Each structure stands twice: as structure tokens, then as C-alpha cells.
Image (cartoon, rainbow, N blue to C red; front, top):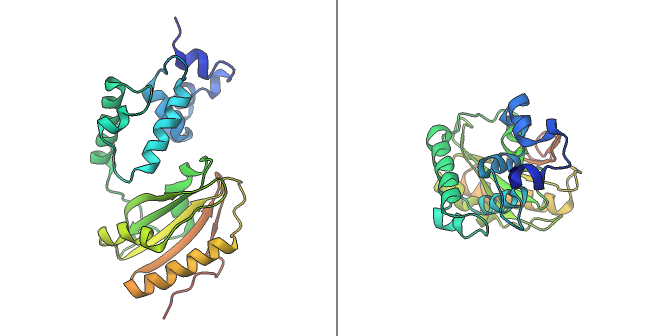
Length: 229
């Protein structure tokens, strides 16, 4: 008997577009975060297919700055002890093996590469990247999750983790679920507030990018972010 993963979720999806087939044919980088989690979870439950379950798990992971505990994962309806342990083990292994980022931010595309997998979210994610003095990435975090077309963020939320990381510099980024990457007055306002706060804290504000799945818009590249002297 085929499981929920095969029958419920992807029944009307062409075989070559199903997560496992995409993984085999094009590699894991071709999959969305939800699709990767769907493969890990393997099956759904009665009344909740694996794609929905993967979406619930993805929401939990986006809301947590650190790896959630097994108990937190088990609080999601449809994820029992076995699945929760598998997810927790996968996350911890990934942290141990690949947790220290070797990326270095030299241009906006370097930021985009690290955050573009958030572009398919239905709500805005405001993301911070902590950098050392050589602009090597120390951490990437979701700071806040906003409404469908608006993220509400305060500088203290952005800088709390950056300071804890003992960073010397930072970048921020956020997705526009509409797919439009043009900056808004609200985007300009938070960028100005972050720049003023960064100057007081002695941090270098490298860039703020707005991104969709296939494009980005950079404040620094467009001359809207200049170092305060």
C-alpha cells in the first residue's frame, strides 16, 4: 500500500516534480525547505498529509532561533516520538557538521545565497546575519515573522543576537511574499534606524537586501546605505 506521502500529497504532481525524484535528479539544493522536511518525515497522518506536516514543522523551525527540543517538536500534531527524534538528530548533526559558516560576504549575492530559501514563505521573514571583522558569517537567524506583506521589527530585536555573537559587522534581509523587491517607505525607515543604532554600537552595517525567489534589491548597491562618519 502506498503511504500518505505518495498518495495524498503528490498525487497530481508530475513524477519528476515530486521531492524524492527532484532530489535524485537535481540534488538537494533544488528542493524547498518544505520539500526537504517532507522527505525526512516520509509520511503524514490521517487528516494531515506529509506536506502539511512539513509546513507545520517548518513554521516551528522558523520561529525558533535555536534547535527546538524533542518535546517541542512533539507538540506539533502528527509528529510522534520517532519522527521528533529523527528531526532533532538531523538538526543536531547538521549543526555539528556544518554549523560554522565558512561563507564570506563580499557582495549582495552572497547574502542572497544564504537566505533565498526563505523566499517561498507566505509571511515576511526579517533575517539577520552576524559577521566577524573579515565579514565571515557567524550566524544566520530569523529575527521576526511578520504579516503577509509587512514585518514589524525593532532594532533591539535585531541587535540582541548580533551583540551576543560578538559580531563586528552584520547584514539584514527580508523577503517580500508578493515577489516585488522594490523598497518601501517602511523598509527605508527601519534601515535608517538600524544604521543609526549600528553607529552607536560600533558595528559595521554591511547591507540590507530585499529578496524574492530569483532576485534581490540591495540598499548599499543602490546608494541608499552609506557608512556614518
